[in-house]
Structures are given as C-alpha cells and as structure tokens.
Length: 363
Image (cartoon, helix red, strand yellow):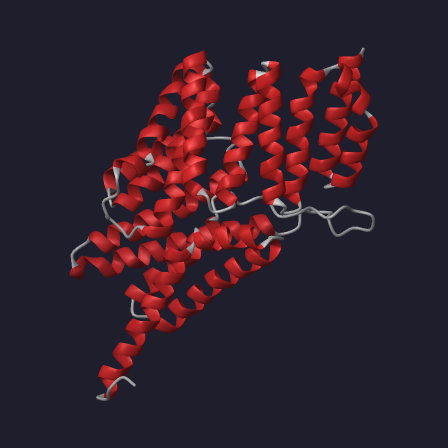
C-alpha cells in the first residue's frame, strides 16, 4: 500500500509538471507524500529525478546537477539500477546545457558501457545515440565541411553501435530512423554524398508512415543540405542548377516548418486551449535558414542571402530569450556559432567585392 501511495504521487506529479508545467503543484504533491517515500525508499531516487527536472524547467542547472548527484547516491545505496541509469542520462543533459560537453560525453560513454555489461541492450542503445548526437552537435558548431576530426569525437561509431543494438534487440523503427538520420547528418558534415544519401533513404524507409513531426522536418532539411553539398562539391560549370535545386528543397523544408507551426483547426475558438508549436529537437528551422543563405550566396543573390542569415540569427535570439539562465543561453548559442561564422564570412566577402568593384580601398 505504501509503495502504491508513492507510485501514485510520482505519476500525478509527473502529469502536473509535463502537461501543465505546474512545477509548484507537482512539488506540493511529492511534499505531501514524503512519509510514503520514507516508508518505500526504493521510490525516493525517482522523486529526486523529478525534483531535478523541475529545477531544469526553471533554468536552475547548477541546483539540478547537485540534486541529480544526490539522486545517484541514493540509487547506488539502494541498488536501484534502473533509476540510476535515468539519473545519469539526466545528468549528461544538464552537463551539456552547462557547456561541460566533455563531462557529458564521459557520463554517456560510461553509462553505455555499464548497460552493455548488464545486457540492457536497448538502454545502451539510447545512451549511445545520445553520445553520438552530442558529438555531432560539437562538430556542427566547430567543423567546416570535409574537415577531419579526432576518432574520439567521431559521431559515427556510437551511432552505428546503437543502430546494431536496436536492430538486434529492440526493433524500434522510429529510434532506428533517428539513428540513420543522425548518421546522414554526420556524412554530410564529412562531405560524403554517397553515405549521406544511403543513410537518409534508409531512415525514410524505416518509418515510411507515422514519422513524428520533428523527424519529418529533419529529413526535409537533410535533403536540402545534401543538395547543397552536391553543389559545393560539383565542378564550377555544373554547380548553378545544383544550387537552385538546394534552394528549392530548403524552401520546401521551411514551408513544412511554417505549416506545422500554424495553429490547429479549432484552436482559436472560444474556450479552446492554445497548442504550443511542435518541438524542434534538431533545430531544423535554423539549419534550413543557414543552408538556404549559403545557397543564395553561391547563386550571387546577396540581398536574399543576407536576409536569410538575419532570419537565422533572429531564430537564435528568440530561442536564447526563451532560456531562463545565462549558462543555458550561452551553451545554446555556442552550439550554433558556425552559422554565425558563415554569416560574418559572407559579410566580409561582400565588403571585399564592393571595394574591388568600386576600385577603392578598404577602410
């Protein structure tokens, strides 16, 4: 009975926090059931995990990290391996948001190894996907097209290992499709057209029907980025029509993004509850804007290119303002510095061209 009370309190608190963003009400629920957690201590690490989640919602990342460390201690003391794994996953996310990516990667690598040793194949796959994705985010922020990167930072090995585990043990088509899409993004960054095409096609075939909104957006942007890659690698004479194809695909991706951000039918009726835009875990809108700007610049349409770069920057600024603590904001903007760098490079090139055409000298 006591374990049932604790379990019910956890479920109710989670519903309040996740559906209605009522962190204070959720905290009150767990506080009122503190006696049940004292009598059923196996549930305490799960309560601690929820408390850390509320702190993350408020942007209090340093406090959340301390709570997660306490939760890890509780879970180890109680021998609650399942709760311990979830606490470590949450800890990696917080470390990433704090800009401590190396520690986040170390946490995920260790967690994946522990899950593999336990034979928890699907949980190991989840940790490996997170590790590969975190490596990819780091490279997308700092690496130029086709640049070599250290083996320890290569996203492909953990993503490929996760894919193998999912196919052998989990049979989770949406997760498999996500892995393949991340492998396609890795291949694009590496400049490998063939590998990117193959991974993207396999991802789309994996869940031909029923892919979630975030993944559909990601596919559309990847198709545009792949077209842009083909153009950038083509001979100069063959490039213009390829850049035009990249523009077409990227505009189509942005149209998809815009349509899925529109209010659903009936949302504007009296008494109807507002529906927030679908989450964009891949930052597809920003990536599409930057890629479109690069395509337009290559097509010698500088005014349009600059407008898209500005829209990409405005997207970052809006997202930054939504984040409630400076450490979160700086970490988010830091992961997107390559787009800002491309904008600066474009502006420098435009200034240089203007000086040359005017026969003058730079100030």
